[in-house]
Amino acid sequence: MEYNDKVLDHFTHPRNVGEIENADGVGTVGNAKCGDIMKMFLKIEDGVIVDCKFKTFGCGAAIATSSMATEMIKGKSIEDALNLTNKAVVEALEGLPPAKIHCSVLAEEAVKSAIADYYKKNGIEYDHDLLDCSEGACHLHGSNAEE
Ligand code: FES
Image (cartoon, rainbow, N blue to C red; front, side, top):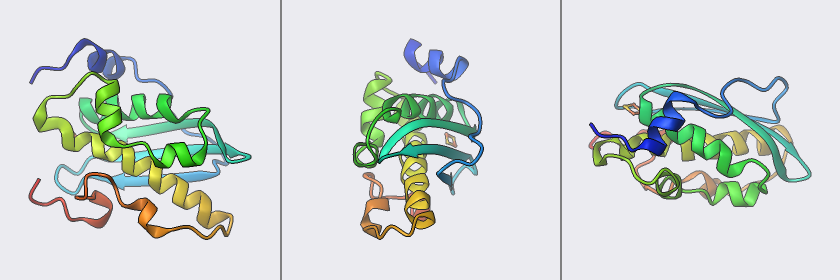
């Protein structure tokens, strides 16, 4: 299993690890296949993600992608964060071994799940399709068994 330097850097020095107390949105997602879990905490002000932290109990690729995903959504609007795809995260990491691409889906789902939590907590109506991940084989919906 070959990880590139950028992935190794985010794996060995993950950014934004931890928890946010009184987070505005918290999302927990799991990969049904390997049992790995990712928890994402968001601080949201005026529709902007002003802070985010994550905890991942997972493989190196899951840690690297969550680290990169938090860097990519920090300071962005909720809408921009909802448009974050696992492919964009993998591209920002300059690639993952093919067998580890499914791990990157966790990061996208965790962001979406945390935003959905924010919407729910604030009684904001939202389009549930927002939560559909770009891979179409979403762990949130437990349909990735054949991946
Ligand atoms: Fe479980 Fe990578 S092997 S997320």
